[in-house]
Length: 264
Ligand SMILES: C[S@@+](CC[C@H](N)C(=O)[O-])C[C@H]1O[C@@H](n2cnc3c(N)ncnc32)[C@H](O)[C@@H]1O
Image 1 (cartoon, helix red, strand yellow):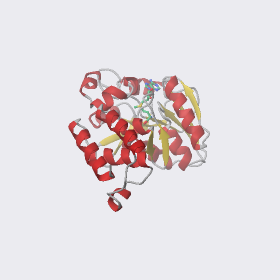
Image 2 (tube, protein in one colour):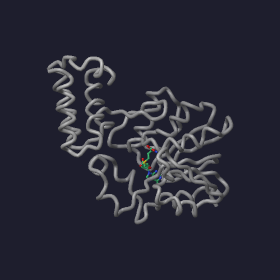
Image 3 (spheres, helix red, strand yellow):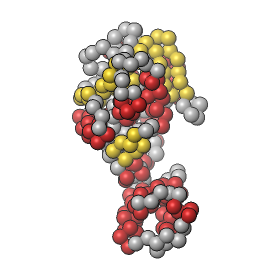
């Protein structure tokens, strides 16, 4: 088999399965299986695919046809400058969450930042990578997620203080960042199969209006402490009412995604 045929067959199968980006997914999965960069497909569309590689590709396409996310199939996801190991114990980090990292980049050296609901460790580890002069800690209600975050820290050679717990642990922080669950209960069943079948519900859903975990955190944070809270665009107005001096940041698509303000 040649790679062009493998790509065409995979993209056709993924499109039929309802994947949003079938061609891209096929390229990413096949490039990784062959150990090449996607650019190689343009230069060498007649590249030979060995029998062993064809079997790996077939298995990956089968998993993606079931709508398993590409990041879980490959076991990794890029986030800012780092690559994180991910599996169904943790949410796959999303690009809009990079706004939380950006919010902390302006802090002075030595500032203390805590990442609540760290999941894979994405926000805390990206911060440690880019700003080793900050004092960064993290926590998550899920012990399984904390295991993933600790493994990511070790693999990246970063030292992260991570603990299991709901909301904010005891301590004094200059900035609390949080991408907590914010999907409404009634939205869950309507989410894409990629999310619904594979990502952890407890990482996504938070009560009737999606704001239970955020409200619980805001109530815990000492008055005056700065917070940066990720939310759905439709929740921006409600989140602004929960903090003082609220300012909402937009993602690259112009949607209101992170509200910054002070507790109390
Ligand atoms: C939306 S995921 C975000 C994960 C990671 N911060 C990211 O952006 O990729 C939410 C995370 O918060 C955790 N979580 C849910 N409720 C929590 C709570 N009340 N306190 C702390 N963590 C919580 C979940 O276990 C999950 O790992």
